[in-house]
Length: 437
Ligand code: PLP
Image 1 (cartoon, rainbow, N blue to C red):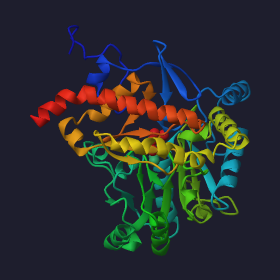
Image 2 (image 1 turned 60 degrees about the horizontal axis):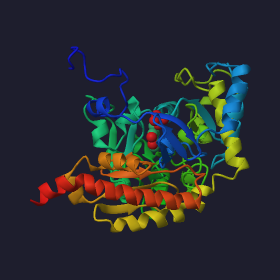
Image 3 (image 1 turned 120 degrees about the horizontal axis):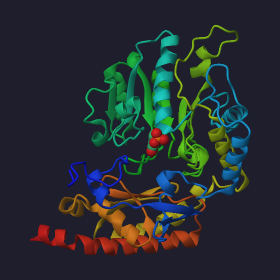
Image 4 (image 1 turned 30 degrees about the horizontal axis):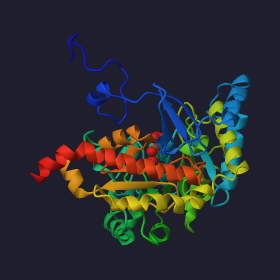
């Protein structure tokens, strides 16, 4: 309570994933962004090393996307794809995504974001089995450190205990297996009973759970295990799609064909909220018979296929294609890793995870985290002082710059991160002295 008898904080805005006690005292208000840069209300300029929240892949302030949004607002400003309604941008977006998909004939369900699509995926999977004579196949398996959004079903399949606990009962027929062990998936399928397992949720590279790469051969192995047991393989590509790993979907860096794919974020360059779920033909088949009378998937958010949002996605796809942006996630991965790896020598750093796409994490050492559990948040503050925006993860910071970043700007990012580590050292010095004493 403050002295007016109301709760702390001048602003009523409740921030996601935020310590509101801290935010009430200190927050970063961004006012403008362009390319890889963002400016705060005082005019300070920052290198946006997280592409906002892993999504401004094309850089900020793309005129092409703004123009497409304005044009669409002047034509059909709103209409969903509820029931038999359709709109041209939604139809075209579905066509283009299906044409780019890693396997032919995929169907496309549209929604408002990643979590929306994860929950849709769970419902589609279970509805598929209900329609094909295996209604008992409801069990879902995911991976430790996995993040699948904040909706009900996505929260239930999450592999980050801090996110899944504290809500009371969630969906219970879920299990989480070690993220780096394909054999553990097969053991769990057999333990639960093959005939009960519906789907396995897998990020190509675990993102919010720490930027964790799967061991060599893991993705191929889990895809094969799923296929052999009739378990649907859901690739959650919300972060890794649209060039983040140098390919359209992220999962297509590996020679596998997922049954379902979730994407969002980079699909519109983060400009408007759109998610898409791609569903393999064999999964969607019961819902697409040759004549009317099909089972109805009684599911769909209000903004599914919103024409203005779809127009933004179409414009973003145009830029990805025209400027050959997708491949940059792979072309630049070595350059990013080369500036980050030397930071592993810094006494505060435990590990640098980089080298696959333009996503990386720098983990602080166990000693640092023991002495100062809030060190990642303090590193974010030190980063701002050094002119770079980074994101805290559990014991680390994440880096996922826009794909349009140039090599000299990657070098500048390295310099600013090195500077931020020095600032962090200074800030942590009292805590380090206390723990040494
Ligand atoms: N799935 C993955 C892999 C994600 O990284 C995220 C968000 O970061 C989501 C799902 C949820 O997406 P949204 O925040 O758009 O609901």
